[in-house]
Length: 250
Ligand SMILES: [Zn+2]
Image (cartoon, rainbow, N blue to C red; front, side, top):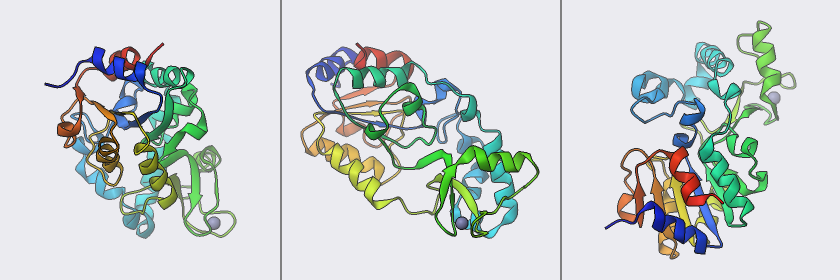
């Protein structure tokens, strides 16, 4: 028998180090589509996943031109945090949030009000660009302004290298220090809550067994079943923006 929302709430009330892992599902109520859900970007258009590999991006100018147009039109630029994000701000204000690991690149946790030092962005952020040639990073809007002004595939102004968003593309290695920190905090949790993630992508999904083995209560809140459900003390399929305030809120 898996536990209920009320029991999950009681674990959080008693906890002092809650570690949260969020995926695309927490941002869908902010109007940002997820990738692998029923309405997901890659479910509806499997070719898009292939196009987003780093190898294709670096090799094919037309892939980059399409990527810049896609970035320009991203719904994330106008998205606002929803009640799910705000519940995690409340959790931090209660002094219980040890760390917030996110697979999301939209920065809605920081925009909602979580302290940037609590947020571990394992897949980077779309709000910055990086240069594949020299490694320089900066505000993405500066590059998008160049695209709007007519540069279909703007190169780095320092080295002429290929620019991309400062995110982890398919085929690109994670940043070791970032993923190590994510796994370390998972092992320090007394309650671990995975929210809106299908838990199919490793090594991030490995945070669940790490937290479990360290003795944490594990709560999975996701619309679809995940491969980690058997490790969880509570598996909740309800709406994130409705359920999370009950579990984490003031
Ligand atoms: Zn450069």
